[in-house]
Length: 335
Image: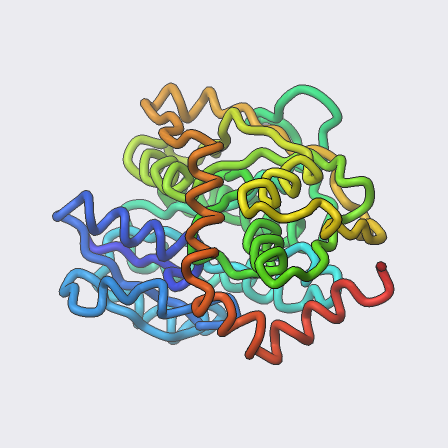
């Protein structure tokens, strides 16, 4: 089985590839990644000499690149995406280029190449905010940021290809994901790295926004279970039992590091900030999947990884002008 994985140098994509190659000797992977700011080949160092992993640098928006990368592949797992809400508020164009037009190029090529299955990896944010209860897969999509709109569009486009072209495709919608090697614009690595540098932690609004947290390996196992057993044309939520307010998450990070809560700096809330994400993943659990990680243990292990691998994230936070410029734009005037 030869699988094209897009976005395989990203946080979730690289974790998925490493897990899959480790646990299934039948699989070989063609890893297509543009290597934007969030793509990092350091995540793939353990695969340098693995003959079952082939890396191709390229843009999924290019029909020629996609055609070449998909040659000989029997399956596709599509993770390549622009993913950060804050960036989508600053400039949404890249999100629609990659998350919608790039998805179109993949779907079109998958039909021509007659791939056996395509998995589109989406997000819980396509449902929007919910004050109480849990979203199920049949609920209406109600995205509220340029990022989540672009993902919802890709989600719907994928399922349209099932109905109009007969493509065997499935969709996953995952909760907030955390673990090692995550780009430090996301809240856990951002707050850990800033706390370790004794810098303020910019917490939006009152910090009462609720998020569902899932460890990256649990998320990846969910994607693989849908890949193996999901029903053609269906969507599957991937969530965990772990819900936390952002303020409580921040306090836990500081407690693990032995840092003072005086580092918390409440800043002006971002525009249209969803209050609560909540998924029901019973449908996926019926396929035999469940989370394996203890949240408290996984969070502490993740925090300790960043603590013990400062050179990895400081190469970004301290030496990347791209990161510094983004941080300034995202939080300027919000203090």
